[in-house]
Figure 1 (cartoon, helix red, strand yellow):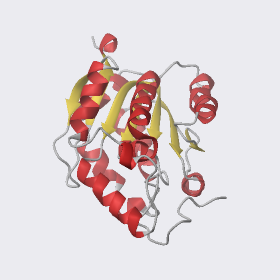
Figure 2 (figure 1 turned 90 degrees about the vertical axis):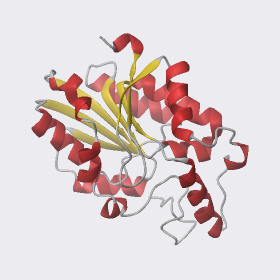
Figure 3 (figure 1 turned 135 degrees about the vertical axis):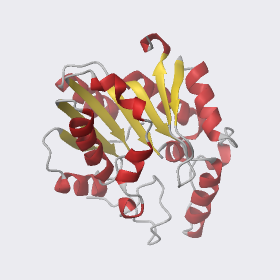
Figure 4 (figure 1 turned 120 degrees about the horizontal axis):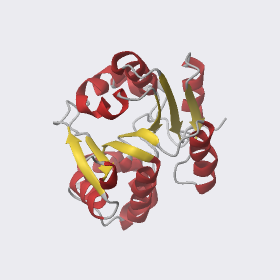
Length: 241
């Protein structure tokens, strides 16, 4: 199984955000605690739902989301798909997973075959058209650095197509600079960084793109977290009643 961190022994220098032992420094309970409570209103009325966690790392947060939705929110039948580009992290997630309703799969969300087979296949398996909620915690920067402006837009369009509600936590521009500096110290560069034109207030640019180009409305927003980010929740306009 390939380790995508093979280029460097520096755990802070990764190409895809695939940090080893990430949740030792970012406990999943803290992320769930800062989510706007209203986010659960749409699924609390349902007997069953499907949830997508993109960039799930070793699965700690995915598992806590499952517990929270099934126990605290009270949805009886929750099925969660956690996906990550790193096969080593997915293997770790599978090894610690004790819940049959959680599935972890190694997927590059930007790869057409991976996307159709694994993500669309999960929806078909559960006889539904869309995930009730898609979570994108600190993933947009890595898509942006590796796939450029067009790749970021493609990613945003794709998750909007997949999910009734989108919970997104973009990294601000200062995080880009840190990631680029760390990667450079390991004699590596991000393939699209020099071509990126969407810079500066990344959070606002993503918000405007989702609203103006993806027909979404921002329905909720958290305050700044202790790690300096905000969490935004979007829905397609035709789904808002």
